[in-house]
Length: 390
Image (tube, rainbow, N blue to C red):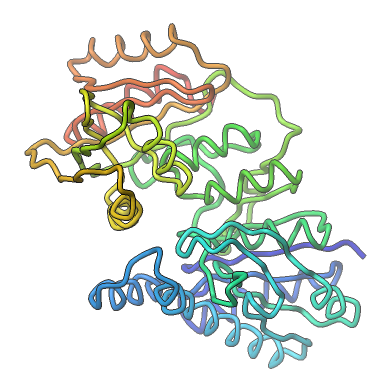
């Protein structure tokens, strides 16, 4: 019998009624396939636990912080397993350490090192549906770890690889991957199929459909992924290597970037940037000079950045720059992008009176920094000129 892993995000399990609906999806799938399930915490729960921990002075990087913020998944897994059993199915819940999912000791942004699926396979062989807590694992120090925000996606992909599942399904409140966040731009188009490379770039640069590490893991292990909605029935979006890349695929947006000036004792700022990228903190460098540089980063990453840099003796000071300007980043995602492409996009925006403060290029993405007040107009101009969704 074919095996499938189904992951349900926080909005899909936000209430008992929604958990019952998810159980019906799982029950239907289980009639023809072996099913392993991965769940997130109920919507809003993790944010509340983060607030509790931060109010007491604990942030990413602290092992006890991970213990607090990972606890929401335990509740969801238990409730879903109970619901499945009430429907006459066999099920049991698993914490990450019970699988076990072994990780590095980078608390708050741990890396999965191995998944021992022996227990899960035994369950599946006798018709038990395992419900696994996403977002968490166990370190060599025997401490609970978390896999970064959106880490339940990574759990699902890693479990899929370990079980040699035929498909990993990621369910949330969106019915696939769109050319840009439809909440920002209602004219956005759903993408039927997308290559791992472009999906990874979209996730890295602001698209919230899937966690970046999960796409990278899927690409390395060749795990076929389908992104779909638990509320609407459609085909969703398939993410795989068996897709022809397009010149332009979509736009990823990061709003409300914060600007910091970092003073250092190194000959170059590059080692600092490389250090931050190890923790998936990607900043745009606005100004550089000897011994200091200015960086724009996502506000969500501020506590983690400060925690990382405060422990390094080559950092003299990290100072938030006070500015009345509110910046956003638009990343144009595509394939084999060139300097000519970036110059053309900057020119198109400037022709429509949109100021571009900074532009950088990657192999599969062009980053453009604009004022947040110009963001929606910029999205419209780029979406039309890149002919996205056509």
